Length: 223
Image (cartoon, rainbow, N blue to C red; front, side):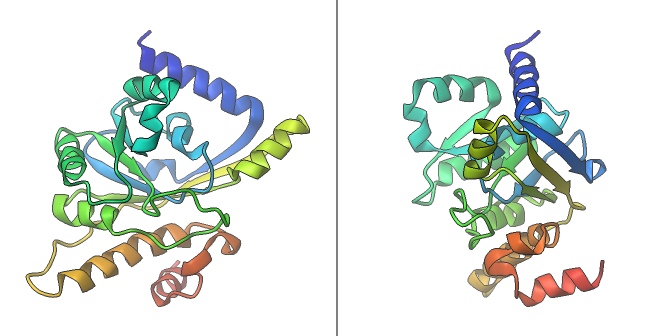
C-alpha cells in the first residue's frame, strides 16, 4: 500500500469516527482528466474532505505557505500533494504550476475564497480560481460543504457526538477565455459565476455575501 493510499484509509477512518456524511452529486466529478474542483471553505477539515469523498489519486491542493513551516503538515503535504502558495501576493509561479499539473490530467482542489470563512457562510471570492479557469480552459466543478465549521466539530467531539456533514457536487462548467478588452470586468464576472454556482448548492444560511446576487437568483430559478 502506498503512503497516499494509507493516508486516505486513515483519513476515512478518522472522519467516520467523528461525523456522518451525505454525499450528493458524486457523479458530477469525472474520475479522470484535468479539472478544477472549487468549494467553499468553512473549517480545517475541508482540506482533507476530498480524500474521503473522491476516488482519485491525482488530486493536488493549494495550501497557505505559512503551514509549510509546520513539520507534520509539511510531511503530510508531500504525500497528499499540497502545493504551498503565497495567499497575499500574486504567485505566478504557483499559477503556472497548477495549470501544468492540470495539463498532465491532474485535478486541482481549491477554495476560491482563499481562506476559511470565520462567519460560517460565503465570503467574497478572490479572482485566482477564475483566472486559472479562464487561462487553462479546464472545467470547473462547484462543490458545497456544510457542517465542517471548526467550533461545531470541536463541540461535537467533546460531547462524543457525530457531526452531520454534507458534500454536494454540481455540474461541471467552462469559464470562457478572457476577452481582448475589459479583462478586469470579465475576471470579476467569472469569479462571481464560480461563487454563485457554489452558493446555489448551499442552504440559504451558508450563502453569505452572495445571498442576494442576481446571478444566484438566475441559477436558482433554473433548477
